[in-house]
Length: 285
Image 1 (cartoon, rainbow, N blue to C red):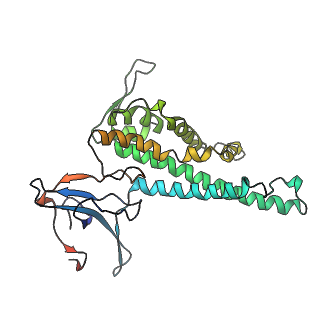
Image 2 (cartoon, one colour; image 1 turned 180 degrees about the horizontal axis):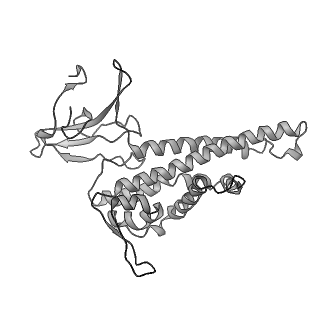
Image 3 (cartoon, rainbow, N blue to C red; image 1 turned 135 degrees about the horizontal axis):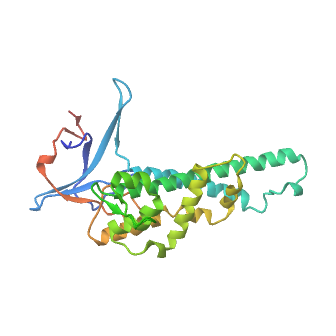
């Protein structure tokens, strides 16, 4: 099935959301289309295609951009936690070379490799967690939306359209001021995750905007247990706005799958929006 307004094809994966099993948390949610007169319904999953060469192509369910970023962060965080627990928190694994016998050079080289592996995973988790939140914030802002900032020192009120918001305003500003306005939520600074998010942004900026090759002090913050709560604040942040959106009776196809929120976007079926081009058994025309 293909929509004339889209370049993507779609597959009917069911008739109703009941009984739908999520194949992969990284995929875009299906959309439930129903006839207003109760004459029928269908659950549609978008499909995309990549041509490898003239005779070979890949068909796959469209991924959710935010879900992909969250997955990269989650996997890196899990690998970092495994190193942290197995090596750094394990008292039987000695990390102080003054207490080790044998070659000090070999000992510290081995420890250093573990530290480098850990830093790589933590930094990957931080950057992709932050990028997931930034993608979520930007995708939440509708076209035509304008944000008016408070008066600056010159008494001027600056206005930002969607493009300007995405380009010039920090993620902290988007989450603190713009998203609450869009989703109708209360003060985000009172949320448990707010401090974790602020720290996540600080850590991300330290990675991206490094000013000196010799500045490595910021790595030391990664060796606290709290680093994993900071990285994993992604889902609580998104869930906060998700709940508000849901309470207003709304769903959005750009939302990723979340552990505690598995509702599916619903729209009224419009026959003229679709063209049948094949089926799962016979393939596409």
